[in-house]
Length: 87
Image (tube, rainbow, N blue to C red; front, side, top):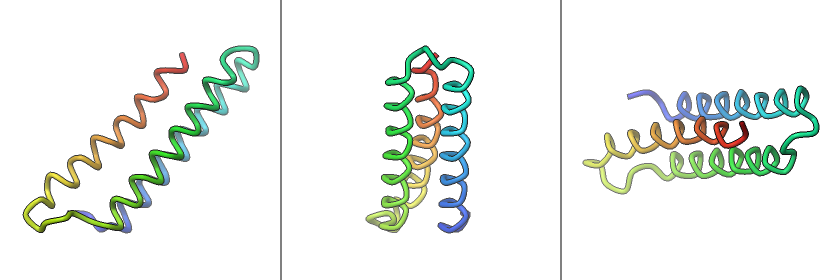
């Protein structure tokens, strides 16, 4: 299992990259869907904050550790899927 610190760094990196993609989309398509992009950025930041809080709390039971981190990984994939809503 990777460390919590490394996992948080990965989440921050992923969030940063996805937000940069949103700003790049706005740069090349300034007339299209500004509100949708703003909502997507807000959703990304909100998801990032939720993931960090969940990691800090950790799994509720030591036997659920594997499923806990699997859910974290699935939620990170959902963050990537938020970009599909823009296009």
